[in-house]
Length: 51
Image (cartoon, rainbow, N blue to C red; front, top):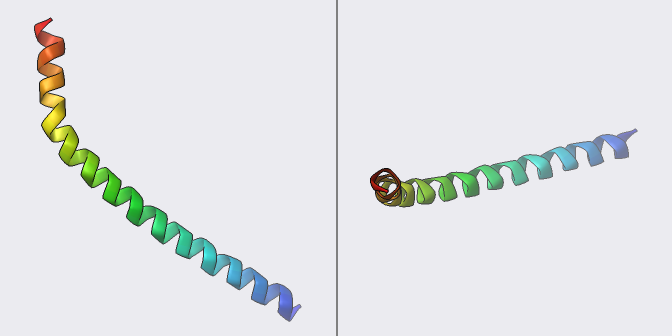
């Protein structure tokens, strides 16, 4: 029983660690894409509207 509990808690900790890393990476990529999008999207919209 103790081994199962330890393994479960270890798995939960690993999952939480992976989740935190994933959210950090996603936030970083989203901010990068947001900056790129803010620069690129107006030009794209202008091109599509003008044609």
